[in-house]
Length: 122
Image (cartoon, rainbow, N blue to C red):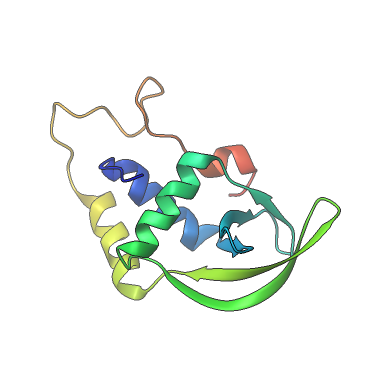
């Protein structure tokens, strides 16, 4: 499913920089790192769709495989990498002034979800 929610795409790309994503299994389910160890958690469907969309658009790329833990399960996942060009786009987008008709990025009534707030990562 394709989304045109720019705030969501930028947030997901920024989360890929901060916490990191992995694709697991043949269905390429998306997991996010939860700590410095090799622990991961499954992400919500909308976030998974956004990661796959960013991969298709080449904002994100695939890296090496890693052994990770999700609860009691031992998984092998492929790391999702963030190219420098994407990091530059994120920084640029965060510096831009928003049009007055757009909801504020920090508006709790808006659609933007600060994904890291729910994972407990800084």
